[in-house]
Image (cartoon, rainbow, N blue to C red; front, side):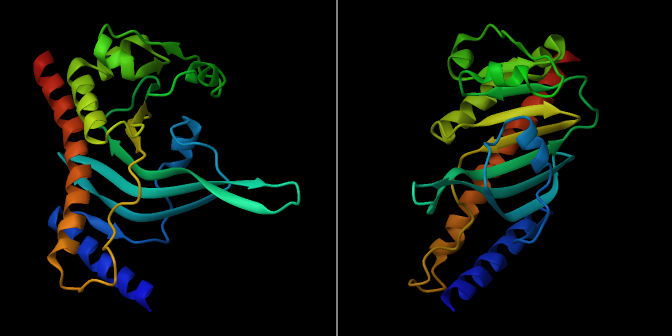
Length: 237
């Protein structure tokens, strides 16, 4: 019963929040947008069991977006054949659509050693992209199939915003990819958008504050990326 009450409270909060930003909200039972592409670009790890919840969709700065949470688990078996499950990813997946498709594929990752994996990613040939920013390149690695386009997409404004996001999330493995007109962002931000303990009063204002903080943090991150793109375009004109 408490779980049902918690779910009802949470859905009420998130529907109101989605409406406030001109978007839509689904608690569960949806097809995770672009998830096959997150996997294909190695932005999320391999898994044996998955669960998706809290899907927000709408427009931000005239760009269509999808935001939802993913919980991915991997199964291991002991010598007796007994299974145990471990979390390999829990966080937020974001798709932001751009007006024009990209010529190639660009991937920004924290992890080292990804290049060998990217060499075998379909039939695409990935090259390491040097950007000349030592602060950025101490944390992130950029790979792409089109060097010119990759440098245009991961421009100084974008790098600055990504470093800010890295600080905000305290090194929670932010990574992203530009592919087929979409910017795909994966953040290991944990389980957000929850209404809190059911052993506290339902009218506790802190419930709403926590949900608002969680959503505001994600929206701020999205705004940072989109305003970086706007600033870059203005700088080029």
